[in-house]
Length: 567
Image: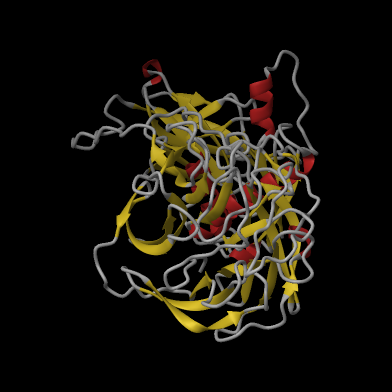
C-alpha cells in the first residue's frame, strides 16, 4: 500500500525545492520541467553549500491519447477525467490512497509546514469528504508512511509503518528504511507483499530522487538497490503498483507533456531482484502540460492522480488537486418495459438450408453442430448437425433477424445473420454462402485507438463494418467452441494487432494489453488460463489497404486479435 506522509504534526516529501514559487506538501517537488533546475534548501544552522543541481532533460511525450469520444451505442460507458469533489480546494491535495472501497487517506496542506494525512470517506469515484468517524480500518496490505523525525535536518526523512484509523495516522517510531542525511519516502508495497519500491536521494542516485527497491519481509527490508531503468538524472517520485503488477511513478526525466508526467513500467522478477523492461508515458488525459504526481490505479481501472492543471479554475492557481479518470454511462438507458415474451415464430416459419465447409481444404465439414438464435439472445430456436455433404437444415422464423452459428471440435466457429422474408413462409430457403470453419479465428473487437480495456459494443466484420452481434457474444461462442473440443486442444495462441497510430514500441505494448484483456474474458467464461499464450505484433502486420477504403475503416480492420488452435 502506498503513501502518506506525516511527522506527527509536520509532513515532508523529498527535499524542500523551490518550485514555481509554490511550497508543496510533505516535500516540495523538483522543477515543473527539467529546464527549471531545482535549488535545494537542505540546512541546519548554518546551511551547508548547495550540491550541484542534476543535469537532466525530458524527451517530448509520444502521442498516446485515451479515446474519450462517445461510443456508437447509447448507454455504454465512456472515459471521463474530472477533479474529485472534496479534494480540489485552494489548499494542496496530493494523494488519494484508498484503504477500502469506502475509505481513503489524503495528504492535505497549504504549505510544507501544515500538511497532514487525513482520513476521508469515499462517497463515489468522484466525491470524497473528510471522515467524521474514528472507527479502525483493517487494511489488506501494510500501510507505510514517510516522516521527518524530530531533531533531523531538513530533507532527512525515513519510512515507517503506520496504523490508520478513519480519523488519523499513527506512526511507529522505529524506521524500516532510513539512510542518514537522505530523504527516503513514497513507499509502495507490491500486491503480493514481497517487494517495496520507494523514492530516495540517497548515495548512488543519478541526480535528484531515484526509485529504489528491496525485498519486503513484513518487519524489515532486504538489500536495497536502485531500480535502474526507471531512473534518470531528473526526479522519479511517488511509485505505486497497479492491480496487474505494473509500476506507476512520476518522472520529469523520461518523456513529458510538461513538468512531471505519470509513467508505467513493466517490471520482471529475476531471482532476488527486479528488472524494468519498458517505461511508457501513460499519455493524455492523465498527463497534461502541468505536473502530475502520485498515480493510483484501482482494480476497476479508476485512476487517481494529483495535478496542477488549472482546468475549470483560476488559471493563476498552481496548487495540486486530485483528479480521477473513470468510466461513466454515456446516457442512462430507459428500463425495458415488462411485457410477455413474444413468440419468435408468430409471423410464421421457414426451413433454412446451408452448408458448412473447412476454409483451408474447401471440403464439407461432417457432424458440425449448427444452431439458430435471435441476435443477442442465448435461447436456441433450433439445432441440427451436418450430414456427409456438410449440409444442415434449421427451422427459423420469418421477418426476424436470425443468427446461424456452426462449430465443431477441431475448428473455430463461424456465424451469419440473415432475415427470411414473409414471402418464403413454409418454404425451404437455401443459403447463398456456406459457413466456413477454420483453425484460425479473427476476433474483431472494435477497440478505440490506444484503448485496450473498453471496446465498442459490437464486433466488426472483415470489411470493418459494425455487426449486429456484440463482441461479448463472440467471446461466449468462443468459450462454448473450446469447451466442445473435449480437451483435444493443447493451446490457443492469441496475437494482438493494432493500427498505424503511435510508435511501433507503443503498439506492441497496446497489442499485448488487448490480448491480455481478451484472455481475461475467456478465463471469466470458465476456460483455464494456462490454455492461452498471448503475443503481440502491434502494427507490424497491417492489413493491405483496399482501393478507395477510408483511413478510419482500414484502421478498424487492422485492430484485431487473431487466435490459432494448437492440437
